[in-house]
Image (cartoon, rainbow, N blue to C red; front, top):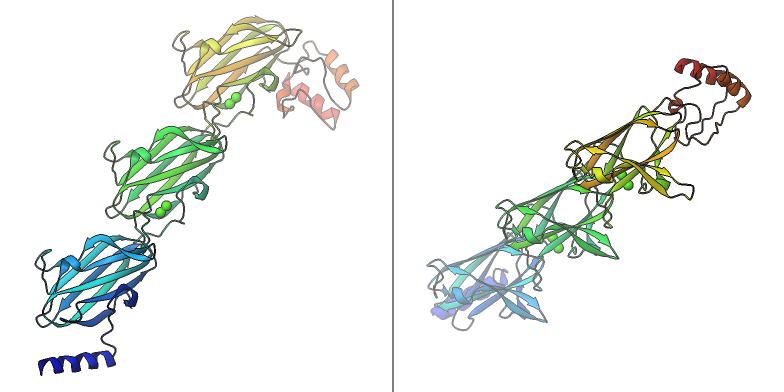
Amino acid sequence: MKKLLFLLATMLATSFGLQAQGTSWQTATLITSGSTKTGTLDGSTTEAWYKINVTQEGKVDMIATASGDLRFYPYKCALYGFKNNDTYWLGTDFIGNMGNTSTADTITYQATNVGKGTYYVRITRQSGSGTYKLKYTFTPCPLANDAEPNDDYQHASLLQSGQTVECRLGYHTSDDITDKEDFFKIVVPEEGHVDMIATATEDLRFYPYKCALYGFKNDDTYWLGIDFTGNMGNTSTADTITYHATNVGKGTYYVRITRQSGSGGYRLKYTFTPCPLANDAEPNNDYQTAAWLPSGKTKQGRLGYHTSDDITDTEDWYRITVNKPGPVELTATATEDLRFYPYYCAIYGINDNGSTYHIKDFTGNMGNTSTANVITLQADEFYAGTYYVRITRQSGSGGYKLTYNGPTQTGDVDGNHKVTIDDAVSLVDHLLGLLDPSFEVADADVDGDGKITIGDVTDMIDLLLDEE
Ligand SMILES: [Ca+2]
Ligand SMILES: [Ca+2]
Ligand SMILES: [Ca+2]
Ligand SMILES: [Ca+2]
């Protein structure tokens, strides 16, 4: 009689759609998040199978409660992934309400690292018979996902300075793939500082030793020599990691964020801070490419920055013009941790064959040592001519200011005995009429090529008279 009633109840449940349980993973019934399924287990049906479709990373919670004398067997109640055309145990069983014992009337399951895919749920009877309810809840990771796949630099997505992106790591898909690292890239437009901070949620922990910035040369990435630092020191696990580099030059860099353990979301912020001083016109690493430094002017430059393709700017050249014999003075002042190498900072002349000859070194502010953040060069008497100034870095990176003061200039600013104007006769007449024909041409020669262009000679004469 009892068995008949039970059969009747089963038939009724089936006809009302209350019972829908598969008996193998192949016949598993779909259960959606937030819903509850009812089924029956007894001596003839000892296990039930359900399946869930997980479309993003998050937590899976399940609870099954038995009625009557039905008892579950927690050790054989579990979630299964699917790969190679078969299910596989994910490593975690349900837990019985009396602990992880062999019999329970309530069993629960929680997994916090569930990635995308279809999973299979197995509910197993230990003894007795009766109906049960199975409830499934999926809770997505509260942070948005990064664009996967991104497990190599070729698939890195672009980060903008000032931007914070949300990402996920450590989730394990049904087909057995754990997201262990994410790559991003940044495009650095000029010299400056790069700062990054990544903060993990839940139990996700980073591996600072394997979180780093990479440059790019010879068609591949290379480690720049600095890792992220973890908030627990440079240990192997951290929920907050930071990166700071002060010598970053132009180029595209790759950022690698590596998980050490756990799963969760994380926020990654990238900030680029340009060097506060203006850049000099590169390349200028020899006298042939030196830019003109007018007398009485201060120019700004940068040294010591390292580009993504592995080039460090170690020296800058400038051209000065001494238009009549007199004293020459040069001063360079570095910012940040940039240090000059006074022994290799000097003024040079040019031989007839085009080679340079050394005239005088700068002196460092700590004496004639190998490192200085202020260097000066003073000479009482220089012959008229064109000279070249070499500024060499000893260590560090930063901006600097370079000032040149020489004898008062004439119109022949580059010492080639040519002045370009529209009406040369008027100007020469004017110059010849002066006791000391001189003016500061730097204001008119905007590009420093030693030539000036004026449309009206009258304006030029006004300029000359103003400057006297
Ligand atoms: Ca990811
Ligand atoms: Ca990834
Ligand atoms: Ca430079
Ligand atoms: Ca340079």
